[in-house]
View 1 (cartoon, rainbow, N blue to C red):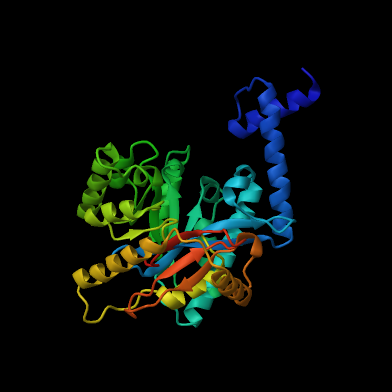
View 2: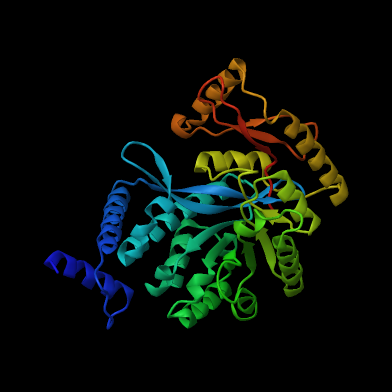
Length: 380
């Protein structure tokens, strides 16, 4: 075996678990080469301030109001393209890079939250994803509390999102104790991608969490006759009896939304409402659709208005953008300094009811581009 191959196998064995052996194979070199490239790209992006937070709205399903966001990591490439974390996830397997990414995201989110608070914008919380590496690095509580204290952001606005796999690691007892301490400081914890790991129901009894986020793999299967319908309805019932809040992930169709509403699900996120957007667009969403106190309107009345508007919007969803509409969209995009490469523009369509404005999202690139998403922004 060539020396380089031995080195790759040794590196991989140390990463997996010391005291074991890894047999070299051709795919091992490809995997590690891809990881080294990702580590290099992310390290350079961190040094050049090209890592930033985008925000996907958490929406209250029965009223269409935005109650908060999930913060998602984005990297701007040297060519100006904005890419999601899934494209450089391999880099997070390096403990040093993972720690730097988390610190960068926490600083971005704390700064943006402080700006929203200073602007008097209505939002309840922002969810931040944490990995096993964040817990294993140590001093997580001190780091989190210091960053948000320096920014002047109360911890009640912070939700820590952790997947089941984090609890199933070799140091799961360490994670559980750390999360307990974080909750005692005022932060809330969400169990992310719920239902995709092992022993999910057991975790509801043993893991100290406040929120469960139903994985999109269940939501996308909410069709008559599918077992996911029974599972999701059962999870919502169990969560309600345990006093846990539920957020449905990956909502993309009106049918999924209606099904979740019929089960009593109040919160959700997904492309039906919005993709993850930058801080400027998120600020606009809060200004227009942030949750305010309801005055003199019953839930039934609010839901009736919401459904009527969605029915109206669905009728125009497939109409192509006219030249006039494209001019309006481009003017809006220029005013908001949005990227022409990935242009999602929010246009108000009314409203007849001031308590529930509606919006549509378009990606104009030429006169044949079609409307790609219409809905109401909402959260808790």
